[in-house]
Amino acid sequence: MKQVELQNLNYVENNTVYRNCTFGYLYASIENISFIDCNFEDYVEFTGLLGCEFKGCDFLNKVVFRIHQEIPEHLADWFFITNLVCEYLKKLPKNLSKLSSLKNFTLHMCSFESPPKQIGDLTSLQSLYFCESDIKELPKEIVNLQSLVTLEICNETENYPGLTNLPPEIGKLASLKRLVLGDLFLENIPKEIGEITSLNTLIIDVCPNVKKLPGIDKLKSLKHLTINIAYLKELPQCLDNLKSLEGLHLTKLYGQNEEHKIPEVLIRSLDNLTLLELSCLNKPQEFLNEIIKELSHIKHLNFYGCIIPEKFDALEKFSVTTLEFCECQINEVLPSAVGNVTSLTYLNLHECYNIQQLPEEIGNLNSLTRLDFTNNSYNDPQEELQELPKEIGNLNSLTHLSLTGCSQLKKLPKEIDNLHALTVIKN
Image 1 (tube, helix red, strand yellow):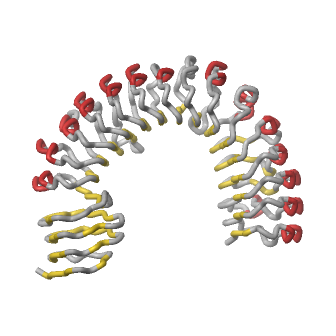
Image 2 (image 1 turned 90 degrees about the vertical axis):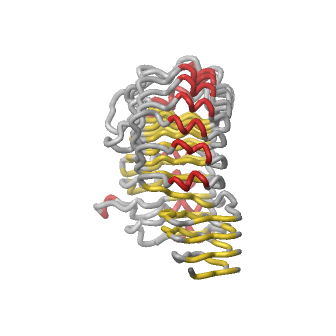
Image 3 (image 1 turned 180 degrees about the horizontal axis):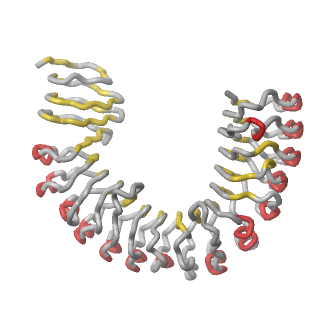
C-alpha cells in the first residue's frame, strides 16, 4: 500500500496508509485506508469505510462517519467515534453500546419495525436526530440517556409517517435543553413533558393530531417556544409560569382562514419576551392589537409569509429595533407605519415580491443602520421595485443597504450621496 507521512492534506486516496498527517476540510468515500496518529482539524465526513482503520488519531470532534443501509460489525469497535449518521437502516446492531464516545447520532430515512431499544445503551449521547425516519414510538430505554441535550424528530415526506407516540419517560431526560417535533402524526403530547425542567427550547410544528399542549406551563426554564396553532383547539391558557420566555413564534399553515385569539394570560406573564415571530397569518394586525399594551417591550418583531395590510397602525405602538418581513404578501407599497417605528436599526424586506414602492416615511428612520431589500425579483418586471424615494437620503445612520436581485432598480437617488458611511450591495 502507498505510504504518506507528515503531510497537510484535504484529500485522501484509497489503498493508502497515512501517518502523522493533518487533514483539513474533507468529504470522501474511503476504502482500505489506514490512518495512524493523524489529526483532523476541520470538518471531515467519511462514507464507505470498508477495510479502513484508525489508530491513535485526534478527531477534535470534527469527523462525521456516514453509514448507508447497514452498520458494519467492525464499526462498533471504533469506540472513538463521536459523530455518526446512519441512512436507510432497518435495525441497529446489538453491540451498539461499544460506541462509548458517541455524542451525536442521526438516523435519516431509516425504518424500524420496532422501537430501537439499543439507543438506550448510548449513555454518552448528547444529540439525537430522527430525520424522515419511520419510527412509530421511541423506546422506553431513552430514559437512560441522561446526558442528552438535544432531541429532534422531524419528517418532511409522506413516505415516513413518523412518530405517533412519545413515551412518558421523556419527562425524565434531566439534561434535555432542546426538543423539536415537526411534521409528525403524534396522537398527543404527554403531560410528562412538563417535568423536563432543563428544557429551554421547544418546537412543535405541524402535528395535526395534537389538539392540546399539556404540561407546557410547568417549563419554567423555557426561553424559546415555537408552536403551530393550525390544529390546536385552543392555545395554552396557563402559561404564567414561563417567566424565562424570551422568544415566541406562532405559526399556522398557508391557506387556513381560522385565526386564534391569544389568551390574555399568555401575554401578561411574558415580562422577558423580546422576540415575537408570526408566520403565515392572514390578519397579523389583529394579533398585534391584542398585545400592544402587554408586550410593548418587544425588541424584535418578525413576519414570515403573512398578509400585510396597507394600513398597519399597530406597528407604531412598538419600540422594536428589528423588523422583518420575509416572503410576505404586501400590496405594492410598504405600509407607511413602518416609517414611524423610529427605534428601528434593522429593516429586512426579503422576498416580498410585489413591493413596487417604499413610502417617503422611510426617511424618518434616523436610527436605521441596515436595510435589506433582497431577492425581490418577480415574473412581471412592472411589479418590481423601480426606484427608491429621495427621503432615503435622510437615513444618516445607514451603513448597509442590500439591493441584491432588484433587477428593475436602474439607479439610486442622488440624495443617497449624503450617506458617507453607506455600503451598497447590488448585483
